[in-house]
Length: 304
Image (cartoon, rainbow, N blue to C red; front, side, top):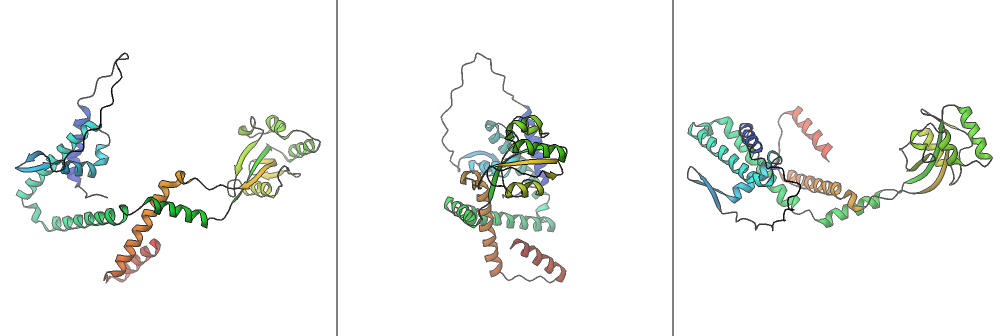
């Protein structure tokens, strides 16, 4: 969350970005050109270095960095080497137009003052979140949340099954008879199943857990012992199934690396709302409108 820029300013910035994108397109390299050498990373610029002045007021590297951060979505379409120039162009637009607004006295307008005050509050809110939530969220916090989630998740059984899907009960019953006579399940599946994905895999469905199959199929599959097949065909909205269970096991939890970013977002959210709860509990808040008070309390209950 960053200090927002007015819609009018963004409109001008969009025009400037369009000009930056349309100009200076690099030529296509020849096929026999020598491979480009990777340049050494440039040292970080001094944030206090003055790169320009507007009306006698300096523009520093820190100002460019701030503009790049606040307008990151607008600049994302530009090559890296053009972003600093686009940021400076945006700063020039904003400052000269802001100076003109001051000359015309718009900064004295009551609506503007209210909006500016609210924007400052939003910026302070973002600063507190950055310093007290984001900066204090550690890898250990994320790992602890992962361990907690794993320990609190009850074990889930899953089965590895195959099936043969046909249109009629009579066809399915005939297949059961063939299996009772020693026929190979996979060979029959490859020959007779109407499930396109099973025609070359012997009807293999892989491992699945509760809720991943239609209820009729799931109930029958989970009731079978490993190596057994259904002696009675199972009807589902797709047709008639003969099911064989190859294996049963407990579902393995996802590796930490697979869910790390999701858990990081959850940990951030938890820390954020804990801070909100603490500060709101300390604040003297009074809402005079009864209907509005009830609505706000409802929102807060949902957040809890």
